[in-house]
Image 1 (cartoon, one colour):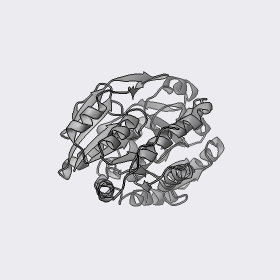
Image 2 (image 1 turned 135 degrees about the vertical axis):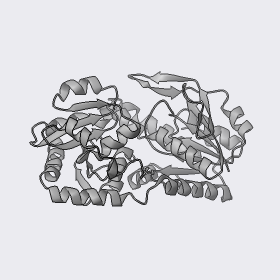
Image 3 (image 1 turned 90 degrees about the vertical axis):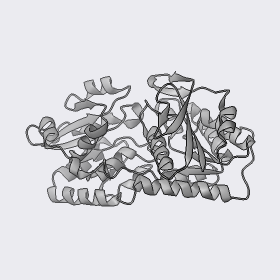
Length: 375
């Protein structure tokens, strides 16, 4: 097959959308398929042998590291010249809207991957008046696609309730070699917890929707050291607000693998996750996860088995869940074993093959959605 991937995010920006696109590129190359990526902003022009066409972008207001693609006159021509069998829309908003219209005019089927809860983010950034408009726009884009793939049961149900047709579940994969308990580093633990404390950590983006400030509830829990890895617009403010926390900055490669595996408990604080790859990477590293009972995290964390769930936004319940784990060594170790086991069937190879099956199904479908005017 020939797959054209149109993404709203790509390297050098690192996030869940970028990660999924990279893994799909690698899997398509592994299985002998041809692919092309259309991505916003400057950066690498190839990945895993897949060419990347870069298009103009502007910085998102208030979040300068995030590049947003601009409407691009070359979209239809580029797709036509590549002659794809399927057009893949990664978290479509601006470029994805262009691409789905071009795909329909070229009579090429499309798959839209829902990955970012933009409406919830808008509400969090005090732009709730825009929430309905965001949903109308996203709903229109996904309605044009031959199939929408959502990463969790919560996301599938949410899209269906908003009238999005042809939604299927497609979870995210995890690199089971890169994220593994064997990468635990005793030297890191000594640096983070010189007194032999248990290490509780958050790894992810430092932005308002992640609600990392909730970690303040752990400031007086005895016998723990709290670490935070990642970067984002709220990092300076959080460092002032959380003086007891060790901020590690952004990590990648082996440093990231070692950081995950060296934790005793992983804490996620954001309630607006359509999936939460960081939580899955913690589980693969054999680390129990404490997370809000919301969104995609409900597909990953089973309360009392591989972690603990708490009411979204509740600092008190977050604290109680962490205390429950750090004061019971046997239970925490048992949950760590269950954490690894809970994701062992989610390799990127398995998830990539499931993606290819979706592509084959829409290619075999007798009818395709017709282009509808935006409401």
